[in-house]
Amino acid sequence: MSDPPTDGEGGSGRQAQAARGLLLGFVATLDEARAAVRASIPAVKELGDLLSLVRSGEIDRRGRAGGYAYVVHGAGCRLTSPAGIDVDVDFTADGAEIFDFWRLRVYGRSLPTPVAPSEEDLRAAVEGLTDPLTEVAPGWFIAPASHRSAGENPKRDARHL
Image (cartoon, rainbow, N blue to C red; front, side, top):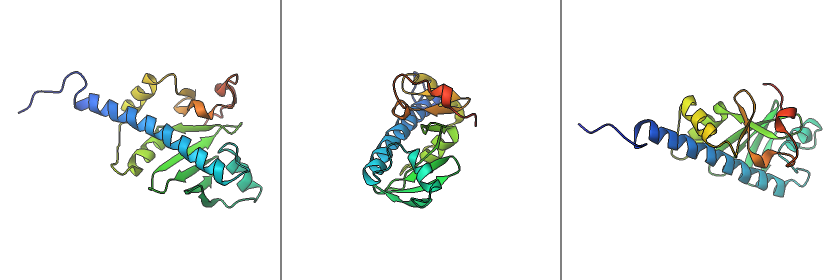
């Protein structure tokens, strides 16, 4: 019989570390997808532009851009990397990308080695990363790359979901 884990080894320490890695990976993958789509579709300055391009009929609701498959849905978009990794976001009224714990778990399940942290571990990871994330509505978050400009307050424009 082994000793119980201490100082963050195994147990909840390992799960919290996995949740933090998942969160950081999601943000990095979102950044990569955003850059790839921008490079592929000149009319896209921000991912939220996909929504208006679909609504105006300029692009299909489903397609490929910069190596990513995209599906525009309701108030958001799911992007799937060439490796099959999914990032799904909704958009605020001003087009900034927002996500919740459900979207983080979908991302985690799509990884080559799936990760499925609990909501409690994800909440702890978010709270531990207060600089890179802002909670714009209960349970909905925005990463800094999604902010329109340094002077804007993302809470002001967030839809309540």
